[in-house]
Length: 475
Image (cartoon, rainbow, N blue to C red; front, side, top):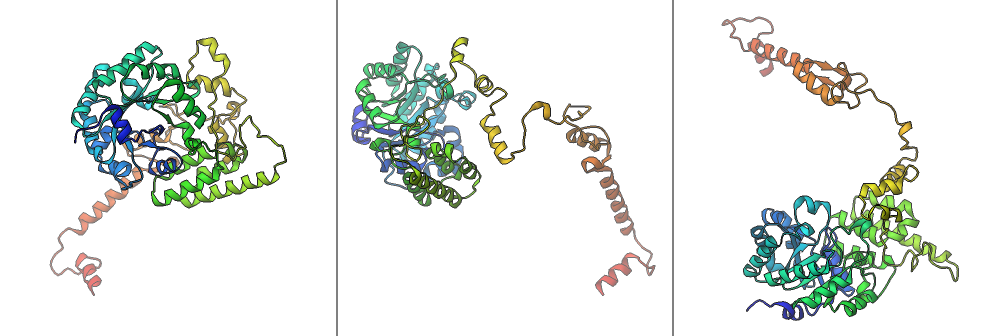
């Protein structure tokens, strides 16, 4: 049977999916996909998988795709990051029997993607991308799709999309932000770019960006003309987004934990999901944030989840008639709702817009406000201080400048002391290094062994001689 393409692929294989859960690293695992499908998602993507690791590591394949046979988890698209046509196709061939399409990630803007040379950092290498898509289109039994970010210029974005379509891409997801728009600089996704791409190509298009409710989904489809809408952040904070519901957080958290009992995943994934679901509540009951971060078992996570539920029910019982949500939230903190990522301060505009992450931290943190990491440390140790003037002063190592050991015989730090003591066969009791002592014991032992092995005169019965010792031992 010939492989379906374009709109026929979207309508028949994907069932005309309009509500799509995005590929999210360590977050769109099987258990979460099943939860999302129960609440209105019609198509899901796997987390982004590394093509090269997928090819060489059987355990990686098993953990991320081969782990469970789950008929409910379809239609499913497997997403890979890759920068080599052969490796991409090898990985896709190993995955194609477990999914309905293979997606090439051209949208990841993170620093790890820059270092690995994949994701959005390939968007200028059109020749390479053409070869990758063309080879996959020729070799695979399932369609190849792409998820991209836009260029600042609409015209260049349109040409980029048309190039991918011509190479063999059968469905295109357009995230309406540039690769520079991330973290506190995310800003608003451009639906104008997405609309222009949709008009310019003859394949289905999914939109991604600015989706916080079902109303946003409907408005996006109407404004851009796309076939479907993909959600990432909105889905993580409210898996019932595509149902148009905002249920109590514990309702979905308990349902997710129940699914995880049957379809296990790393505890870090579970904890991260609960941090997202309970985000607003954990701003109110901050001591439970620390408990959730520390638990080491699924049962421990469930216990913290139960305690959060009880705290929220107590808050509800104390709620006064006519009381409104605090903190500018649309709903009370125990209700699933979107999280609006804070942007940079207005002052950053004076320097031309983009600011580095560290610059933003320094500007917002200053000397009075502690970073989140330092706040966590202070919660664990209330007496901890971060005032540089109160930090103890250490004498420096003569060689490297690190703090030296107070009782080091060489006036060095432990690393430098170890090297010198080994080289000179010396001891440093201050650092617990006994190279000289161990050498002397070793030489003494070897000397004793050599004396024991010396031949004794026949019939000699000297006290303590080897034959006498061995004989007494045997007796």
